[in-house]
Amino acid sequence: MSVIIAHKDFDHTQQYNYLSEENSNDGAVVTFTGLVREFSSGDNVTALELEHYPGMTQSLLDDIITQAKKRWQLGRVRIYHRIGYLPIGEQIVFVGVTSKHRAEAFSAAEFIMDFLKNQATFWKKEHFSGSSRWVQAKQSDKAALTKWQKTSSTESQ
Amino acid sequence: MSVIIAHKDFDHTQQYNYLSEENSNDGAVVTFTGLVREFSSGDNVTALELEHYPGMTQSLLDDIITQAKKRWQLGRVRIYHRIGYLPIGEQIVFVGVTSKHRAEAFSAAEFIMDFLKNQATFWKKEHFSGSSRWVQAKQSDKAALTKWQKTSSTESQ
Amino acid sequence: MINVLFFGQLKESLQCENSQLAIDKPITIAQLKELLVEKNPSWEKYLFDKQLLVAVNQSMCSSLQLVCAGDEVALFPPVTGG
Amino acid sequence: MINVLFFGQLKESLQCENSQLAIDKPITIAQLKELLVEKNPSWEKYLFDKQLLVAVNQSMCSSLQLVCAGDEVALFPPVTGG
Image (tube, rainbow over all chains, first blue to last red; front, top):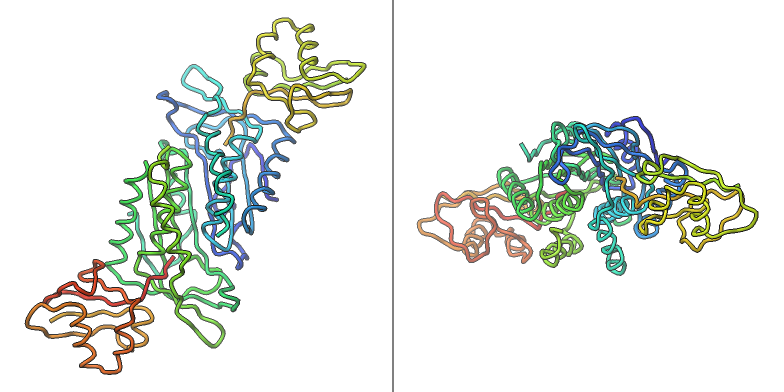
């Protein structure tokens, strides 16, 4: 199963093993892990809270993987996204990709994260000591998508 | 210690933990792992053998990390490169990077791998059943460096 | 009956997770929002936020989309996962 | 004395890991290669391969580089790690 959405934390090793074990075709494994970090716009975050639109999130993530597999020759792909209340330092999301070649693995992992950020139906609330606020969509995340329009002719080398 | 060169295999979790534990500043962790893969130019590889120039390799890898830290705001960096005889499926190299932002972590990890491939004093021999051959430097690895010349004005966004 | 779901900050603002609407003919999303405001006048300032996104039967679409009885409609702010 | 190290395919072709050369004045890498060939005539076809790289005291340099007694010189083919 490529996509997992769960409250439960993930074990990094287990995700890595899913990608690399008995996979002698692929010489490159790239992983991205997103963690709850302490500062956001200067304020001290104590936790994040993540909700999502069940069903729709799953199919959007499946679709992002399909798009990535059309652009690059990929072996295995894993997306693990957590929901619920996640204190500082907790893992939020894991994206892992294998390929024969490192450039394809790097591009695909970043592509998946960029589209996940912009399309997958998750919403994030930041908790501070005594207050909370919904995270607003970032212009920089939208801008990140533009690199996937420009490079379509050169990326497959 | 950021750079490790060793015969001994590495534990992916241990490398990941080195990057992520007690690191609430950085929300993004990107890792690359290179594995011995089964096919090379159509032949069935049984193992790789890696030798290096001790001392020089270490300082070249330190220098690549220094270059990466000048270009991007990075937290922790780890390079683990194995030497010796490595059968199919074995891990060869690990590069891991943390940053506040995912784009910087992705770029830095790929930059380090691209320069490692082109500059670090390792030499690789492929073993087949009954024969062996030294791996020749690839034009595609050299070409990979060009992207780090062009993007210097846009990468830090 | 149309089932309307709300997510994220919108759900919190409306203090409502979902709302059922009985309709007898296909209507646009814009008309559906007006029906919701008729039922809940205080929702007006939230439902017409231009940033709001719409999904019908779990596919993204525009406010011009027609919806019929049995459809699942979701209204939510721009996504912020990952 | 200059210590000359060989790596990778070159080491295997020469069947030699390192060689010591006694010199009484600074010489270029090109001259050093000629001294090595004088000692080992069979090395000629390997040492003048244009792809060969040179490091002096563990820094990459060109064949014009001057080296003196006490220097560590390394000759090797293009690197292929990772």
